[in-house]
Structure formats: C-alpha cells, structure tokens
Length: 240
Image (cartoon, rainbow, N blue to C red; front, top):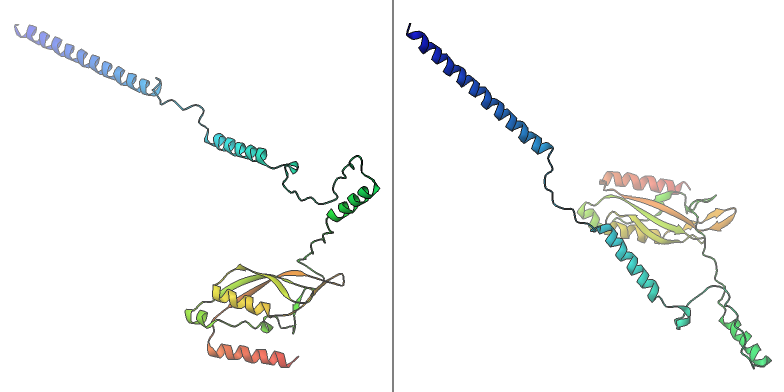
C-alpha cells in the first residue's frame, strides 16, 4: 500500500512539468508573434529626406538666370553697336532750320544707305523630270575610279556613298562622303567624281541643279575576273 502515494506524487510532478512546458511554449510563441508584429507594423526610424534639393529645378533655374543675364547685357540699337536690318530704314524727321538743299542731300544719303537687292537662294531639287545621267550611258563604267595601290595591298574593300549636286552645266559640286569606307578609297572616289561630267537634269523643260547620291563599291577580284570585266567594257564601248 505504500507504493500508491509514491506513484501519485510522481504523476503530480509529471503533470506539473507538462504544464510548465506548455506555459513556456505559449510564452515563446507570444514573444515571436510580438517580434514579427513589431518588425512589420511598428514605425522604424528612417533618415529624413532633404527638403528643397531638386537638382533638375536648380539646373533649369541656373539656365534661366544665365538667359536673363544675356538678355540684360544684349546691346540695343541705340547703344552705338551697328545692327543690320533688311528692308527700308525708318525715315527720320528733318531737323528744324534746314533748307531744301539739305533735305535733298538727306534723301540722297537715305538712298545710298539702302541695302542692295539680295538674290534668292538657288533651288536644288532631289527629283526632276529628267534626272542627270553620265555621258556615255554606261553608268559607273565611265567614272574612271582608280583603285589605290595602298588599299589593294592592305586588302581594303567595301562600299562608300557620295552625295553631290549636278549643276546645270553638268559639273558635280558640293561633293560629300556620307558613308565612308577608308580615306584612301574616299579620296579616290571624290577625285574621280570631280573629273566626271553629267548630262544635267531638267524640270519642266528647264535645266535645274539636282542633288544625287552615288554608291561606289571597291571589291578585290582576281586577274581572270578583271580581264573579263575589261573585255565586257570594251565591247560595250565599241557597240555605241
């Protein structure tokens, strides 16, 4: 019979330990939930955002200030700086006490100060009823472009594009390289184009300057291909 109280006391201690364990677990869970809530909900200290530092606004303000300063410093016509104007000058009232001779001299001076007639800028068209053509009718065959030996030795080949204006007398002017290949090839193409004469373009039956573009291809070929090209060119020339 003495073993029964011992067993009952052991059960009480086990129950007490289990209750303490549950209490500790609930406290730990509550603490974890509190930490999560504090991280997600409570306000956290942040660095204050500077107020009034707008870099774009400062930059534009500086630009406007410089512009206003230029406007203030700009010389006015009455300050003695010569100002060129197109058109007739405003007539000044003749000074009092001047006779007719003085008035006539003033009119002559006014006429002398008038600007001469300025011719209108010539019109260059990009398309015409009759576009310019190379004399001979065989296109690039009659543009004698010499392949630079230095470019051949360096293996330079490719395509370049020239922009120019064919004048009413057939001369190419305003030559520009708008797509470059190599300085050697560019110079050779420009030099050859300057020596070329065109049949000028016509618009409504009148000669007009026309802006054109000329693609030039430099390609290295073997001796047999070169011989065939020369023979074909000679045949075409002899057939005309």
